[in-house]
Length: 345
Image 1: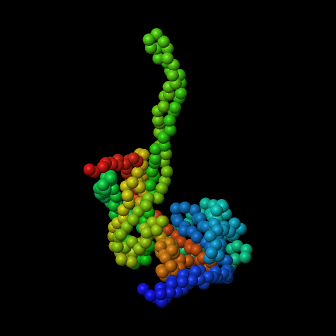
Image 2 (image 1 turned 90 degrees about the horizontal axis):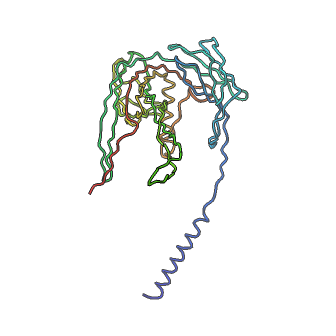
Image 3 (image 1 turned 30 degrees about the vertical axis):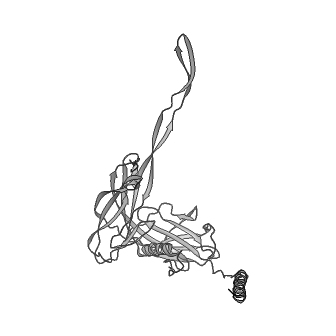
C-alpha cells in the first residue's frame, strides 16, 4: 500500500470525525408561544329517571396545562323543563352540582343553563329515553387449560347473551355494563402469649406458649366487572360499558354477546351480578364513542386527531340522559383458585 492511499484514508476519517463532532452544534431549541384561547365553561353529566340530577361544572385549561380539574364553585346552574325553571342546583364540592330531591322523568326533554362570572352563559338540552327491557339473558361458562413447561392453569370465561327487544321506527342507542356485589375474606388472628409448664422427672419446666389461631371476616363491596365483546353490532368498548345502536337491529330481538373472566366474579361467598341495559340519548352515545376513539389515538402521532363530541352551546362537554333495565343473577366463584404447579422432566 502506498503512502498516498494511507494519507487519503486518514483524510476522510478525520473529515468524518469532524462532521460527527459538528452535528450537535447544528441543534437549536425553539421556544414557541401558543396563544391561549378564551376559557369556557365545561359541563359534564348524564341524568337518569331513577336518581337526582348531578352535573360536573369546571372550566377549560391551556392545551399544555396538566393541572388538576378546576371547578367553578360560584356558578349558577338552572334546570328547566320547557320554559319553566324546575330548580337551582346546589354545589356539593368537587365540581359537582346536585338537585335537592327532584328526579327527572323518562320521555321528557330537559334543559340546563350555567352562568359564572367572566364566562359566556352555556346551555344544553337532552331527553331521557324510555327504558328498553331485557327480554332474556343466558350465560355459558367455558374452561381452557393453559399449559407451559412450568405450570398448568385453568382459565374460565363466562359468556353472556343479553337479548334486546328493540322498539321499531325509533333510533335507539344502548350501553351495557355489569356490576358485581362481591366479597372478600379479611383475616386476623387472636394471638395470646402465656406461660406454660411441664413436670418432668421430678422437676417443673416453664416456657412461653401462644394460642394463635386465625379468624375471618367477610367484607362486601361493589365493583364494575370488566367485559369484552367481538359482537357484530358492538361499536365501542369503553370504561363505562359496551356501546351499540339499533342501526342493524331496528325493531328486532337481538342477543348481544359479550364475556368476562370468571375470576372477575370471585367472591368469598355468593355474589349478586347485575347486567344493566342503559337506553342512552344520542348526545351521550356520541360523547362516549368519540371519547373512546380519542383515548385510543391520542398517543399515536400518525393518527387523525379525534374531536370529542360536545352539545354544550357556548362551552364544551356533554349533557345526556339515560334509563336502565337490570337483570340480576346469583353466582359463586371461589375466592381462592386452585392453581397446580409442577415441573416437566
